[in-house]
Image 1 (cartoon, helix red, strand yellow):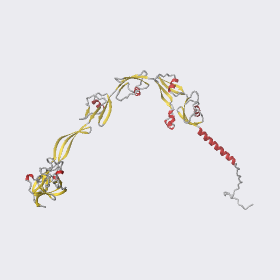
Image 2 (cartoon, rainbow, N blue to C red):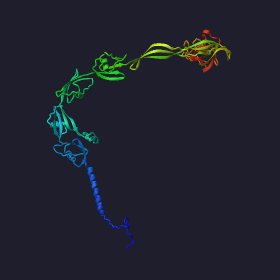
Image 3 (tube, rainbow, N blue to C red):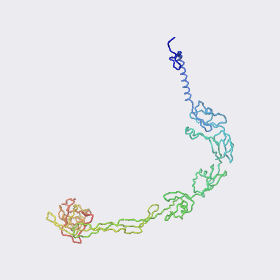
Image 4 (tube, rainbow, N blue to C red):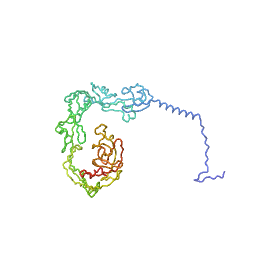
Length: 502
């Protein structure tokens, strides 16, 4: 016995005896054999898969994708679950060698609805070509007759998108119609044409024959009428083509209306007020030409423009010469006109003044000018000289050879505008500022007289004369002095032109 205490009820035993497990004996060579066998199996499976030929078998319009080790089209059809016998249609033929990504079409014996010669019946066939189906049903086809597939089965657009090779799979007919060729005669007045057609309606036959039809054309029978088996004679009366320009739109139309006005009314383009049409509304339609509806709008406007004021000068004996004083300011008046403006298609076509009046009188500007002449003295190298007006001018110089285009030998060569020989003391002036004959003193030049004019001598400018031997070039602003004697009262320039005042 030992002193080891037994566990009480509910307590965990202090230790539990377990028999010793014996480790299983592993055979290393057996494990390696199993692993090698699995690897060979996987390799064989992989090799089988990559050597299989991928094909698509379309069974009655339904594509089936598969990989097969079969070698012929018939084998691929069998692999897709389609038994091959004499009642099955195969394309390509059954013994054709199978190629990668080939599409095989399989058609089982099936019912097909046939419409022919105003009859309908059902035939059983494995054929796919509609002509072959009709022939199997004993329906003869004449030259030009066609067989149309009305309903059939084929891969869907989604299936074709996934495999573009399916786009070439033929439709498996389920319902067909035999269309007999019929004779159509087209009468266009001066033209009469005959042709053969298999179209169902008049409009379809004309379009297939290359005729262009317009909504306004008169076609009898109408385009939607069926063509009978014995054929049909079609009458076409062409509407007149014209182009209508109205309200900013260009409308190519065709019409049977007899006049321009009737066509415009038919189009809802009614002249209003002074609107007019070109050609005249009573004119016949200009075939291939243009009709223009001109919209006319007239409005009366009141236009106002400034009425310029005048400047009035008055003498003032209390002010010195060349002094000015504004006695009264001037204000423009307002000239009003009533104008009638005519617009054609939104563009101004004419403008007529209906009346004119002064809406506001202008106020004249009154300027007083001095008439008091003060005699002053200027000092020169010859003593004091008395003058009555002083001007600030641009002084240039010239001589006979530099004056204009006259050459030695010309009758007027070397002569001034007054006939005086050009020499020192002859001065060219603008007579509006310094009258001819006026005596002048120019500092740095000396005394002289205004005896010449020149095309370039305008305003506050003078040209100092020299001989060719003593020419001195001038181009400077100077003060000049107008010397006594005074001009006669009727020759006196009391007010200098405004544009030349300082």
